[in-house]
Length: 486
Image (cartoon, rainbow, N blue to C red; front, top):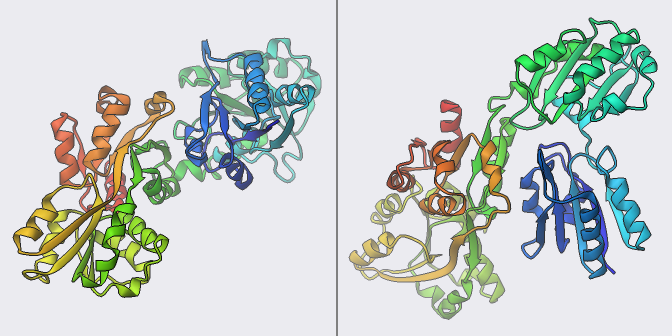
């Protein structure tokens, strides 16, 4: 018998997930997730995990609740570790209780991992504190989905001094405000509605009980929304930290491999962007090809490394085959500052570094050092351009090119995630070709596009995709260009 984890994924911002949830996701054999969870959370699962989308989109139910319950039971009885990802918290209007009860009835072990719930987090991101001393000493959360039929004490709700919060209640907003005013709530009570809080599509409308519905219609807000009523709403401008970030309101697609996307994703998130990560590239390690050169490592005059992936795979393989790096007598050359830093992390300071992340720039630096009959080891991707090997050979150098990894096309779980993207960042020609293959060209042409440099721009031009080019061929350059054109 397996085990099921009911995992709260938070309200939308992918970083609002707990450390425990991430740890559990990594050991799951099967994942079931719904539309309220940010798809980027799936990057934390292991590569062999089976992933099933079972969420509900408006007007189209992919799985009924009973079908989801049956899947949980079936997978658990096969001995799998099952992760059920739910938006927000599993037990706050998420039907997690129903799933847990079914597991209990079947005698299946389960565990609930709490998630940050939207009534608190979405208000926070909207600049509205849930409680505040001397203003709101309590808060009350209701489901607004069936407000017309709610078995609730409207008179009591209307008279409370605390903050009133309604989830999933946009369609029933007229009924909610009507009932509150009917039972004595002042029509001038501040009221706010926040759409898709904590994401790039967050929008906020502020008014009072009397006019909030008209303002929501005027601003064309759509579900999911949270309705908040009370004096705390008046803080929405002073405390609006999230909406004041420079990239707030932008969904930026990062197309790098899983191994390389992290740094860029963090930079963009800190600036307020929502990041959609589509791993168009997958790194396949073929470093065993380096083994036959082990005995020759002390003969090379130069070791030329052309990517961070190459650095990590090269040194990891040396460790795996018990090769002492002190046997390497040659000088190291790095393409660009990131590769330089990756080599430095291994305790070696490269003597040659190119200014730009392109082979032509690296060759210009190498020409100042190499001479005829120098022996050069060039461990790199099977997909690399032949340029560097060819020009070094033309210089009379003896070059051993070793393909220690290969870049293949990545996978995507849900092509629909591209719909919310505003800007796509491309870092190589391969990211361009692979994304086109994965989602189609039309969805790309609809977006703003930035390429990391002229080589990538050339590939975009082939497909008639308009693009901006970063002035510096680095991730920092991409971010600066994004801030410039936003």
